[in-house]
Length: 338
Image (cartoon, rainbow, N blue to C red):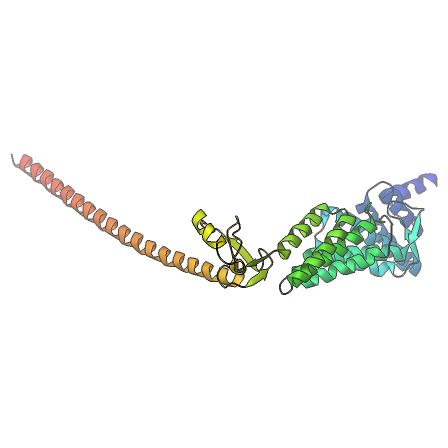
């Protein structure tokens, strides 16, 4: 009998639903093999379902999807598949009051907290995939909302801090909102970027904080367009500096003008608003296209001329070769006669 029990434990054959559930911990979770754990939890769920044990089924399926997500989050699944698994896990956890903490068989955690964590992770993935700035901002805001409900907790599925991610996603939401706002109101965008910077700092996202700070300075910069004379705000967005040769004489001419007409000559070049700059860019592109066509025509004419000369040389060679062949044939005929 002891041998039979040992075989059951080794192979998993003939185990009850509860025994299969426990085996998922023994051979999977506690052994550090989360892929095996996910598979065994799925098998135990099937047995619970056959037994009519709905509570056991719900718990086993919740663990199945939870461990499947943990495995996928380590780079073994694409974002789309992870989102699908997260939806399944969130749905399964909604049927439970508590569940075993990832990596443990005895420590229990409220299922509602795990749902908040996984929901935040879902919106984090959606934000990563999204390209539309306003939608991206909304996804980051929803991720921050879920992580914010976890307070100072360390995640169940990883060693990440919920508080850090709350600040990171809050900053990201405001940051992308600022990018949208900058299209019409760069001054408002500057305020948003400063707020995003503070949140990134709290979330210990130094790279993002630096980026927000750089953009804030750019969007706060104003210049007078050298062509249309209008004051514009937002460097590299609503105006750009164009290289120009500014001689000492020209600089002195500008500086000698009445104060109200003076324009600062930056070492970066001359400022042109996006509209005026696009006009010059189009003119340059048009000239480049026209010159390219001219060069193409010149090259085509040259190539055709070279081909004609080569053809003439080949014809002369062929004619000379034919003459030599005729001469050899004539010599052979003469030799045969004499």
